[in-house]
Length: 378
Ligand code: NAD
Image (cartoon, rainbow, N blue to C red):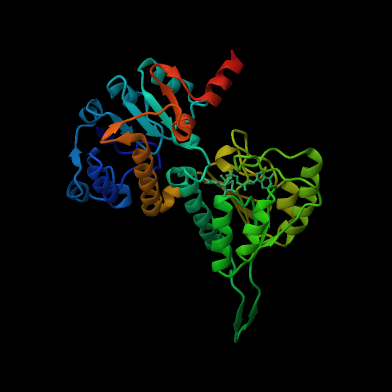
């Protein structure tokens, strides 16, 4: 089986889907890897390092894709990349099938086996293949560092000859994978951390990291069996808003990460809350890609409103490209171990992980929730 890894073409994308360490491990599984020349350059992996690990390095992208059984990428392929693949090949990348209808149609027309990495089930078994988790870890860490860099004050408490410095207070909204890493990072830097989440399980995790959990006075646990949160009621939202408004006023920085699977990001930080914060405070909105948890967030940009800096960048993992790629690459190795046998694809359409993330196969949409969503529209 031949895996092709082209250079990422999306603007600002610095990650690569495979690093040399995993090329070597794939070779032991009987999987051949061909890299487009320069594919690893944005995260400092040279063509020479890929060759030494057993990959072939190809200058001509058309030739690379025409020979591939599997196209491996971080970002969804372009239509041109899809068209360059042999009919019936596989694609493993982010996909967003319901938002990228043209791509979806092209996958079925060309009988591609199209995997969407964001659909990998959130189960213990699949955790080692889960790019949402690995990249959320990176984003949570980077969000706090970006906030620290913009904040015109220290994070830790300091006792100095020039007087005592009070520690920064950090409010983290949403304590999933990214939020927990943000809490841990802010704590390491010495901030006092307060946390809000709608899942009850998040409380214990936040406390174990030395944060305070802000409890909404309501008997609600918004956790689904899949581990995600579901939408909370209007009454709950109002109680949460009142609680958070009081704490936002005292916070020097807010990191927001709250998401509901398949929905726009819930609006939690209102303009009034922002206006109530001290000038010079910082908000990093990790939900920006899905519209943002703060009503004033501008996705992809950094703005200042009411004297508060609001960071809405959507490419935080790419800004830490070396380790983000290392983690992505390990996720890919684990996924390919799961999907192959003796160096060839072996799809088990009844397997939970394959069923979860294989969107198209044999000219049809085969993923249950995607085909249900499409049928609902018809
Ligand atoms: P996510 O990115 O979907 O959401 C981030 C957090 O926002 C979640 O903790 C969610 O509860 C919270 N949230 C949603 N609405 C909110 C609101 N209105 N106010 C405050 N918080 C709100 O979540 P995630 O990072 O993917 O993780 C969710 C859970 O799934 C966690 O318990 C995590 O440990 C678990 N998980 C398990 C696996 C696995 O086993 N493979 C993988 C990833 C995550």
